[in-house]
Image 1 (cartoon, rainbow, N blue to C red):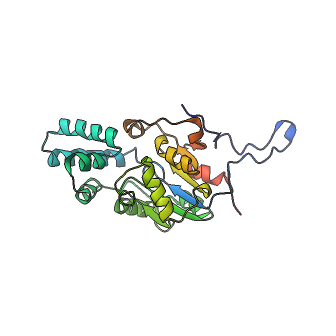
Image 2 (cartoon, rainbow, N blue to C red):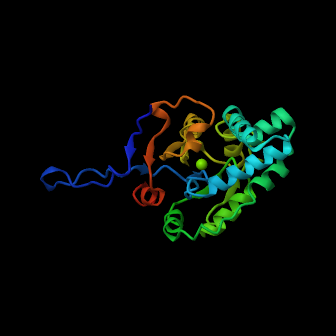
Image 3 (cartoon, rainbow, N blue to C red):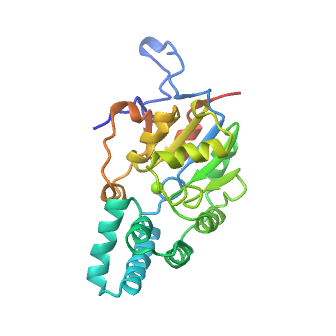
Length: 250
Ligand SMILES: [Mg+2]
C-alpha cells in the first residue's frame, strides 16, 4: 500500500514546540501552472446518488444491447469494467458497440441533487495557471455536472473519453496525448483523482499527484494496477480544504 508524502490534515501546523514557528509545512505547489482534475468523486461526491443512477443506466444498456436479463447484465457490466477499465471500452472491444449511443444513454440521469459549490469555486479560482477536467466520462455529462456545481467557467478545457481515443485512464497513451494537446509541461502540472491507479501514469510523466481518498466501491472494482509509494504525492478527503492549504506561485 502506498504512503503519501503529506496529508493536508497534518499540514498547516506551523506552531512548533516552545512556540517557535516551523518552516512553512503546507504542501508546496509553487511549481504548478496546470491543474488537472478528474470529475466524478473528485470535483463532487458521486458516490451518494449519481454513481448509482449511472450504474443502473449501464446495466439497462447492457440488458438491451446484449439482450440479457438484469442480473446477467449487471454481472457482465462489472466484468467488462474490471477487464477494460470502462464498461464502454469492453462493449466496444468485444461487441463493436457505438460509443455515442452508449454515452448518451448512461448519462441521461437526474442531477437535481447537485447544487453550486461556492467554496470549491473560490478555491479553484485562486489557483494560478490553467485548469482542466480529465474524465473517463463524456464532455456533455461533465458540462452538465460543472453547471450544476457552478464551476462551468473555471476550466480551460475538458478532456473526455473521446480525447483519450476511447482508451480510458489509466492507459498511459491517453495521458501523453492530452498533455501534448494542452501544451502542458507535465513537471509543472498537478493531477487530482479519486482512483489511485489513475495517478500512476501522471506521476510517471512527472506530474505532482493528489489522491482524493475515499472508500467507494467504484475505486476498487476496476482493473488492478500496482500503486507504489512514490506514485501518490499527497492525499486528502476534502478538495476545497486542501486547495486552500497549499502553497502556490504568487
Ligand atoms: Mg473519479
